[in-house]
Length: 501
Image (cartoon, rainbow, N blue to C red; front, side, top):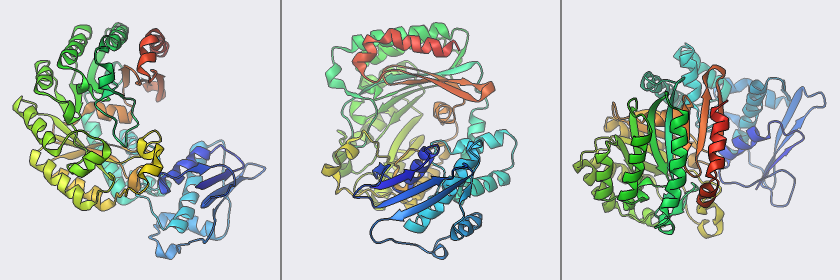
């Protein structure tokens, strides 16, 4: 248990997020109490011009000399300030600079106590590539971007290189997208065969909804009708069916839903239509044939791992052979853009397991791979039932991440989008790799927030972009399926308020 003890909460979230990066899965409290292992104490001066930060250890403190750590040149001035016990000079009218000063100081203090250096430095947001992409679009040179990311965030060279490479690819892929008048459509199918151990997405066992799907579709179709009418004359450019697991639906319901999309929206400008087939145990030849008959351009078949013991542990009801069979079936039916999701850092897996998974995936030759670092969400069973799962070993290392990147590049796949999550094992990132022409444009749009994305269905969030103001506004749908059905008029009213601004 770790304390965050502040006399001013203006930067509490920034401090807490960096603490979470150093101590993923820890419990944080905001007062002294028994059981604290460590605490950060922050004191804003009465004149609000300086901020003092200290890290307090309870029990036997451990220190790592800065000389033992690989201290970058950008960190040396801050280290001298720490040694001289100088408070941080802050300007509370300049949030960006003040936040980064506090995080840089805290980063070095935590380095000294833990011996850790985080690959992304002080960056805790989910969109680190947005920094590089924005600066490239503003005409900044690569060297200047490298310098700024080093000095401002203490980001490591490998992650800076990855950010710039992906940002350049994103610029290329988005060059034909209409940010101002175009939009994308997300359709949420909040049903799954089962709930995985690490999952916190809004999903319901599909078995509970057999025979009741008409109720969900009635509400969903009403929302889709509203969106189509509201956006008449605008360019619909990408469509994404996510969840949950869209292929939890029966072949008849899948056909009915896609037919509704085709009959309701103008698809003449759609560059990409993705359906997450996701769970191999939800895939049948009949469902894949429905997707082919409708010309779906991209699907995902997600093993997460190719180690059977792990699949059993995390609650996946498919086998490794199921993955191979469903993948072969999709190829046989003519799908030529298949993604596979993998997770690094799953319980009890080591680098040999990751290598075995990558060898099996390499043999299948998917068109894209998305490599996730396990993130333990608050609502996941892995977190809510800690006593049950406390002995599970979770390991993620730079060597594991590098191994997945090596295999992806051997397959001719290049990184094209990246995002991060809180409480990620190893504090790394999720990276999408794709062969030329097979990248998912929707993934880039949702992560870089470059276009309005209208989301329909339970538990979805619509994001409207205001390009002139570089601003995003949101409208959320309720997560509970029954509530969504009962309150569909309210969900539409929320969209109307947002889209009429």
